[in-house]
Image (cartoon, rainbow, N blue to C red; front, side, top):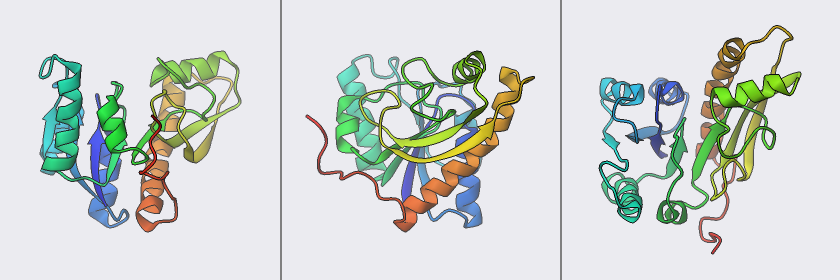
Length: 205
């Protein structure tokens, strides 16, 4: 299974996936890394691993339609990937990309969806909301990406306890390793056919 990883910042989930691929734990290979942030650590990780990488953003493609088409070209013509893996990607995908890879784009979210999802709910914003709500359990969710933030079909979840003295930092440190584990396990189940993705032939609209 050929993967494209889209990320905007540190890329720790990307690294976990690459490490699992290199060790044989994951029957998939990362073919390309794409980021909207030219200064992101994920690009440094890709370079170190010898993985092709690209920057696509409003500076490289000021026209949103051209940006969307450039993304499609990278994923299909240049790299011919099977699955698009979002790993902390802070931009909404364009309609052409969503249509072209309908049912074949997955994301990981640092909470138990449908709780604490939606626009603006990413990273520490999620952990802060979990703590503010007084939750006793949080976790991570792998889901299929659709037009709406965090509303696609859920593929897998794992729970993480929340302690009374938790801060955003301590909660993040507890959730992140579980994200890495869950993402790799879920991708392997997809590769093995144990998890069936939605029918790619029937995007809405």
